Amino acid sequence: MPGKIAGVFALAIWLAYVGFLVLKVGEIPLLIITAATIVMAAVDLIQTEFQKRAESLRRG
Image (tube, rainbow, N blue to C red; front, top):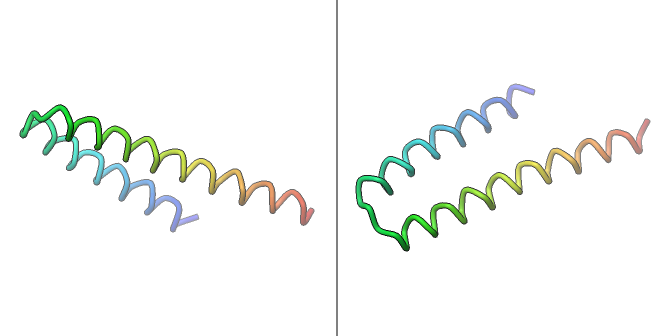
């Protein structure tokens, strides 16, 4: 559980930092790439949690 909290916290810090840089630079392609990366990271996080939960339910 502490690792999960640390991962979410690290992701939030990374999102804030990268978001600030994108807004500071103001490039549209960079914004698109950053948004896609953020979405992929979120999907990966959610998918990993669902896989862990499904495995836990299978074990009983």
